[in-house]
Length: 538
Image 1 (spheres, one colour):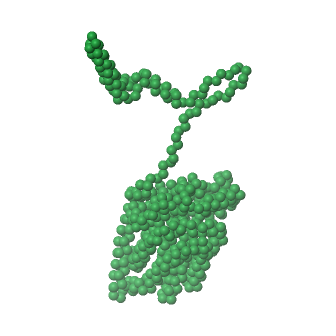
Image 2 (tube, rainbow, N blue to C red):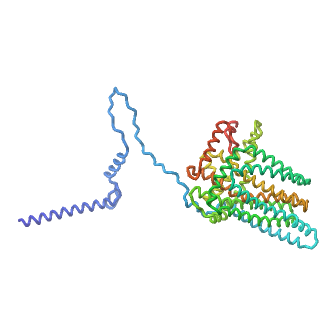
Image 3 (spheres, rainbow, N blue to C red):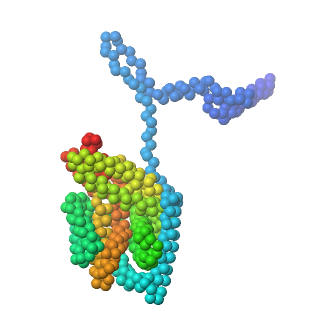
């Protein structure tokens, strides 16, 4: 009997273990099914018990206030509102580093138009140059004598003015990097004195065409002197901005190389252009042909300047935004290929926008109480407000850094200024005006040089040579001054994008506080956008 009892006990234990194993297998199968579902006959059915358990857990997560028993005589406590779960605020996503190496070509249509224009301009310049050489080689004809005379007395002063413009561009850029605070005031008054001297020189030649040029330069000189007396405080601030923004250039010794390369290309193109003008003098419709060549030269020179601008902007902007030591050669390759379409589009619109800016400023100053002038000023300010949202010179920073198109970059940079309350600050900035006046000063010096030379050799060409010399000297200096102007633009835009960066000091915040204090006192600067006083009068 004892043996039978032992066998029975072992069978019972084995049966119990088998039952437990089956139970554990069922549990494993149930765990394989998603929560709240069980398998019944091969179908997935929602388990009501599991659902109730889940709902009870969700209810338990909400903090329900306890029930309070209050007597009728006591004052009722204020109702307690259950706290709702607050949404988790995620920080705004910054532009990814990968976007800094965008390979997408910007403003492709403008890029193709510029390439087509350049091909036509090169073909036309080659054709007209061939015609000039062919005319010179002809034997004792009226055409050959005219072209030889132009080649002898017209071309050398222009080439000399081009070389002088390159030298002056070197001098201006080096001086601004060495003495930025002093050079701002010097540029204002130097332009006043040099243009006056050039105007007086042209008047002394006592010829009808030179008298017109001399009067124009004298009027411009007077306007420059008034402007220099009007902006002394802003000139002081612009000097500090130049000094601060040019500091990172010391970390990139070769950053001015692209500007020098663009000046060399500009000199070669101007030399070919001069030959083309000589050939165009004997072609059909000479005034119209020469006017088309002048427009082509203006656009090409402006594109060369903005290629240098984009190169410097990328190097300095990535230093401010990412602390990166960007390769200058790589930045130049991007500016001359991927971002060339934006440079071409900006070269067309930015000079026009700056001219409209001058008109709007002048009308705003002269409006007074005259209703007509008030309406014109109001209209111009409205136009400027719209234009600067879609096209401005600050756009080159985001074009170079993020590879945006010209319009998108203009919107993003102006949006940054709007969010940081910097519209009046960038409006009162005169760094672009300073760079413009340096170009005018170089052009006036080239006029003095070339006009004096031509007057003693062949007086008939004096005014023509003076005009071309002024134009050439101005363009060369503007290409050279692309470096400081790009550094200033990066300083403003990168501060607006990241004001907390340790690379910026209190220069901009202090100036913003001064502008806001002056606005509270009723001293509002001349803006691009419509000010409050205009809106109130409207």
